[in-house]
Amino acid sequence: MDKRRYWAGLTVVYVLLGFALALAHAADDPDAAARATLERIQALRKERPGDGTLVFYESLVRTGLGERQPALDLLRTLKGRKLGLIPVRDTGFEPLWNDPEFQKIRKELADEEEKTTDSRVAFRLKDPKLIPEGIAYDPKGDRFFIGSIAQHKIIVTDRGGNARDFSSPADKLDAVLGLTVDPVHLYGVSTNGFEESAKKERRNAVVCYDLNNGRLLDRFPAPDATQLNDLAIVSDGTLYVTDSQSGTLFRKKPNEKTLTRFGEAGALRGANGIAIGADGILYVTLSTGVARVDTTTGEPTRLPQPDTVVTGGIDGLYWSDGDLFGIQNSTNPGRVIRVALTDKGSRIAGITVLQTHHHPDFDEPTTGAIARGALHVIANSYVGHYQPDGTIKNPGDLKGTAVVAVPLGQASGH
Image (cartoon, rainbow, N blue to C red; front, side, top):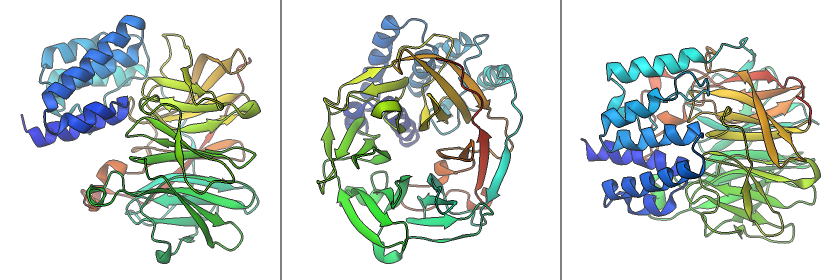
C-alpha cells in the first residue's frame, strides 16, 4: 500500500473523528495510530450498539488498514437501514474505491436514499477557482458574503450573483472558512492550519469587518488553536469558534482581544459546525452527532438520538424555528437535513431530509446561510481539490460556485 496515500486518508479520518493524539503520531506510525482509532470506535460501539455512524467509521478505518473483507462486511450491515450513510471519495475509502464489490455496496446504499425535489439555484458565481467554504447573509443589505479558501479573501454578492471583492490584499488573510454577521459586523475565520505554511508558522484568527464601509476593524488571534473552522456570535458579543483538528472550542468575550480555549482540549471530537439556539443554547457538531455545550463550564453533552437517524458528519450547522439544520458531506456525498429537537433542545427526536445528494449541483457542499425562508447552501465547494501547497487539483473539472436555496420546511413539533 502507498503509505503517502494511506497517511492522507488517515488524516481525514482523524479530523472527522477528532483524534488529535492519533493525528499527531500517525505520520510516524500510521498503522499504530489506526489501531488506536479502531479501539476507540469499538469501545463506542459497545456503548451505542445501534449507532450506524460508528459502523461506517469502523469500515473506513479497516479500509485504511487493508482489511478489505471486514470493511465490506461492515458496510453491508448498513443496507436496508436507510440511514444516508454512503462512502465519499477522498475520505479514506480510496484503497477500495475501484473494487467492484465495494462499488456495488456503495450504489445500493446510495439508491436507498429517496430523491427529493431539486432545490432551486439562487445564484451562480463565475470564478471556478474560488474554492469557497463559508457563507453569511446580511439581511440589512440583502447580500451574501462568501469566503475563499484558495484565494484567501472574502467576496460580497447580491442575490443575482454579481460579486466583487470585499476584503483587501492588505488584510493579509489566510484561507477563509466560517463567516457570520451581527447587525454591524462581519466576522470570519482566517487560518493556514491545513496548509504547508503552518509547518513554519501556524496562524489562526477571527477577523472583524465593518459592514458599512468594509474596513478591517480588528483581528483576534488564537495562538493555541490548530485549525479554526466555524464560528457563532451570541447577543452579548461573545464569539465561539470550533477547532476541528484538535476537537476543541475557543471563545472570546466582548472585552477580550484573544481567542482562548473554552472547556477541555479535545472534548469535542470532530468539532465543526456551530449554532446558537433559543435562550443562548450552544450547539456544536461532532463526528458522530451534535453536542450541547454548557456556556458556563464548556462541558459538552452529546444529544441522544434514535438509531434510525444519522446526524454525524455535519459541516455547517444552523438554528431556526426551534430546530437545527445541518449540511452533511463526509458520511454522505452531500445532503441537507432538518434536525427536530425536543425536551427543550436537549434531545434529537428525528430528522427530515430536505435535499439529498442527487441534486445535480451538489459537489462537496459545505456551509449555508439562512435567508428568506431557505438555507442558501454552497453546493459545489470543491474543497477536496485544494491542496496543502496551495495548488488546485484538476482545475479544469471545476465550475463556478452554485448557491442552492433549500426551503426550511415545516417544524415537526416539540
